[in-house]
Image (cartoon, rainbow, N blue to C red; front, side, top):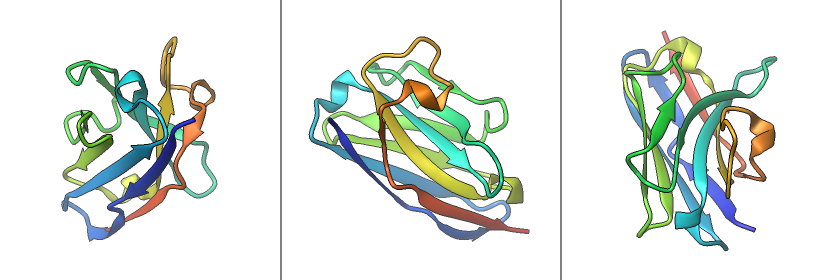
Length: 124
């Protein structure tokens, strides 16, 4: 089973950028579909973006499209989430997730491996 560790969260102002990283170990990273989800206080976990085994095949939620970009480096066993033009409504704990296969990819229950999460707080 792959283990995931997120990093890169923090407190920023609206309009700033952050890059989250998720380092994987214990599995064949290149065989996994990777995704980012987020969860704000009192809300359900929300899909942000996914990237398939090929780094060119990505899907991003409409709420962050044009601002967030997911990428992966299979040589470093790491997936990234570049977040630009951050808004206060982006404040949440961001989670990295992995799965060997998906049907759709936007539902948390499709993913069997999760990181511990990293807090992103955007002040206005």
